[in-house]
Structure formats: structure tokens, C-alpha cells
Image (cartoon, rainbow, N blue to C red; front, top):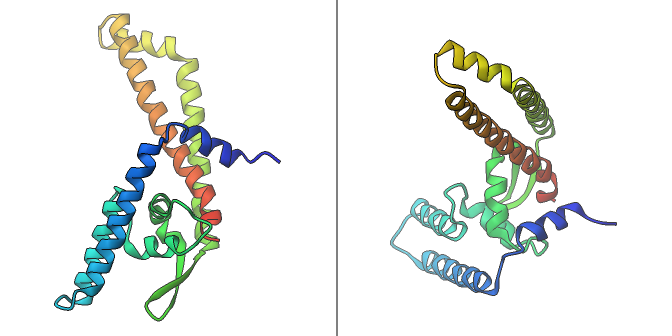
Length: 192
């Protein structure tokens, strides 16, 4: 059967060339070298080591929204190839996840079902509401433009441009929330 997630991933990553793969490999090598150096440091406390490891993880991912604990957890899992991409996605939803430890090592991640479904319901209803508002804004565009131009005594052209900019911002906000919704839907798969 055709897997839509993989097709979408192939489409989005179609421009990923060998040059990018070599850059990714160099970043990973630097990351593992930095982690080895940090582990060998004897003159720093454990908190300082943790902070340095978090900084190395953020440098590898290119985002501040990641920590070493998640990077380490995902790079040890063979089913996740691009752990530096997955860890920031999971970090966004960290309040929906239970962490289970063996000693100080992260053993596994589990989804808090009640919070997950609550968040899913909120995002779904928000996306439906934003979509309906966007449809209404498009349907009554000419009426809104006429109202704006008569209320503020400006020309139809200027109010049309302003209204199009407003619609563009609304669409961007809607697409952002749809992206969050898809990443939330993907969260149970990332925690297996």
C-alpha cells in the first residue's frame, strides 16, 4: 500500500543533494567528537557538562529547541535515521510525554494519552475555525473591501491590497497551525 508520509517526505527532500549529505555527516562527526571531549572533562561539574552537551546538540540540529537527552535517545534507535531532525519535533510536544529513566539514562518515551487527545482536539477545532473564517473572508471579500474603502475614505485599490495582505497573513497563520496539527498527529509514531 502507498504510504503518504513517505511520499510527502520524498517530495519535501527532493533537493537534498550529496553536498548536503556530506555537510550532515561532518556536523554529526563534530557532534560526536564534542560529546567525547565533554565526557572526558574532569574539571567541570555534571550540570556544566549537561549544558555543554545541550549546546552541542543545538549546534547539530541548528535549533535551540532540542536537548542532548532527546538527541542521545533518538541516535541510539536504529529505526530513526535523521535523529537531529526528529528530536526538535518531539521537543515541541515535551509536555505531552512521560520520560522513563534507568538511573540517569532515558529509557523510553510514552505519550500522555489524555493530554495528547486534549491537545489534538484543541488544534483540530482551531484549524476548523480558522479555515471557516478564511472561507468567509474570501466569500465576502468584495463587501469587506467596499466597507473598508467607504469607512476610511480610501480608494478601492489600496483597500484591496490591504485586504489581500490580511488574507495572506491569515493563510500563513492557518498553514502554521496545520503544520503543528500534522506534527502532533505524527507524535505517536515518533515515540514507538
